[in-house]
Image (cartoon, rainbow, N blue to C red; front, side, top):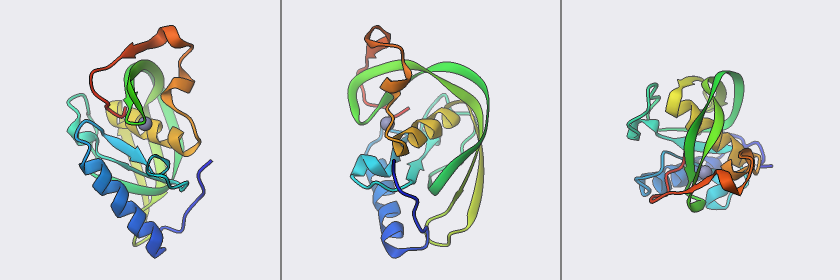
Length: 153
Ligand SMILES: [Zn+2]
């Protein structure tokens, strides 16, 4: 389990910048969580606007201590992960979510209402904070597909 952070702490602000820079360098990836860059902190970055299937688009965002406050309308959709190269699977996720968190730097509280691909991407990143991969949410190896690119969520 990744640890909660003080969103105004300089080292957290620096980690948020690192996470965003890493995400920008991975064009096939729509989101990253701090544990993927070796930090066991509750910090996620995402930019669902890059994905053609996205509906809601909060834009490029880093959120500290993100917390799922609402989830509805579940369906399955294909996911991959930058940390699991070459594999993807259909994963059940809520298609509408509400997430509370804080912006690194100011510490300002934010509420994100996301749907469709963006909601899937955020839930995928939240799982990383709890040490879960999408592989943990599919019934077995027969559910896996090979994917040509490593696209997080
Ligand atoms: Zn991932």
